Image (cartoon, rainbow, N blue to C red; front, top):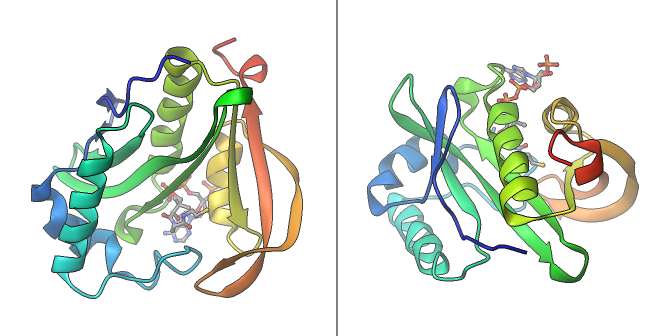
Length: 185
Ligand SMILES: CC(C)(COP(=O)(O)OP(=O)(O)OC[C@H]1O[C@@H](n2cnc3c(N)ncnc32)[C@H](O)[C@@H]1OP(=O)(O)O)[C@@H](O)C(=O)NCCC(=O)NCCS
């Protein structure tokens, strides 16, 4: 594969770019401290801006790895960062990866995450050389399933009681898209 690390990507409404220390306030205010956003996530809401600053520094350090893909999402219309999207697992031997994402509930329902995920899928197939991109969601979180569905990710099955998030143990829906099914084959 042709790893480039986290390079800036742009869509009509969004800029996907590296985290910077200046993003801490928006990240804290817009999504990181939210019970609503983290309901089905594996991490708990952040309790202070200092915790967010620590996480951002960790992200910045990780950018040194050529196969680290972790974008903060800037919404051009409001000039704020409103969420993030990242590659959370890579299998070099089969050119496969898993993605995850979250964003501020102030901006839900505008098709923003499908726009970000579509661009990340294009980048991973076309530029990095992935063959399979997967993602999972709690069966009780259909909104996330809709994002994946809008991006062409098909349900492959439900892994029963196979994951844990802030709601406890959950059934995990596995979705994926293959390069040959995408626009980029
Ligand atoms: C899942 C998530 C990323 C969706 O992003 P989004 O930009 O709102 O995506 P969409 O606009 O395409 O909306 C997806 C679905 O959410 C639902 N939805 C839309 N607006 C909503 C709102 N204001 N409140 C609750 N749900 C809403 C709709 O069912 C929509 O599907 P539809 O377009 O077919 O009606 C966002 O809800 C989120 O960050 N959730 C919390 C974190 C999370 O669950 N991450 C995924 C973990 S696997």
